Image 1 (tube, rainbow, N blue to C red):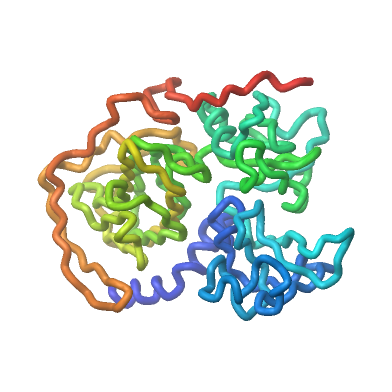
Image 2: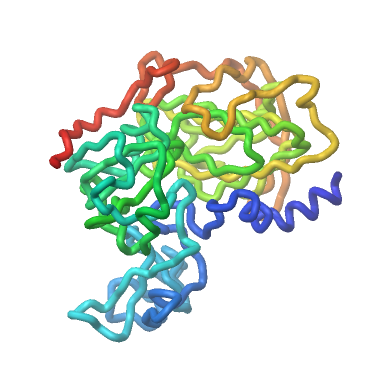
Length: 401
């Protein structure tokens, strides 16, 4: 098994990409702020070459002002998003109408959960089940609105319109370049909310507080993502892959406030804490758990909020499995948002090796003195039973037709 794991670790990212299809990406944030790829022109076909960041001293973003690699800047000319715009961009030499920069069309930079940018031909619209508008629209406010009405897809158009549905006719509407959906949301200009005549479509699982997963690989986001997670969140995700002998977890993005808020990975059958992370102890390595059932737990106190996390897991199937002995959850990938009924048991003790940045290893003993409690108030997006959800207050007036 050790040799198998060694090989699997070395090929983790490539195998994960092939296993999850449309999750193949270099970006896990909604606006590509985490893009660290090597595209150095505004488009792969006929795009303008980017200027080097260490030669753009006449502009606000350069290596003289940001010498320590902030925002991914450096002695290169790769597309980046140092100011948190709606997508990566770069400076260009040829000005067009006085513009000295352009967005980069990067096919490999698409956050998992974004199904794409599509033309809105009007009749029928890409998503036709429900629609509303808001001058404070964000990606998650639209997703929450659709998820709370039990729709699988959420679409945003022109920065203020939100559409819901369960099916999308890809052939009828056709994929459009991401630049066509780069209009900033009215509620958050750093998030893309479609464009004129173009709808950006999301899976409503993005930012759900809890859920059940049985696929070999998937991406899970913190509650309310890409918005900041709200205070007082208590969320469980169960990950149970029948036949798996090990599940690997990689946090591709992690921004948790101080030590009061936390993320835990627990062995599903024993409820032992395998790893615990917070603002002072972020994940620095891939976590592997030799089990086919793992619980992901997130807690935020009543004062803090931050950007949250994105986590990708990959299950490896082997001959060793405990599914037959313990049974497994039968929910499929389309399971509804849920707060898991499996609570970590009080008094559980576990031990793991924590490797710091200087490669020094120490043993940390974790003791759970009490089970995590549900909030005494209903939280936005919290699953309350079949057909009942504590919804976000979106205050969306009817969409004018």
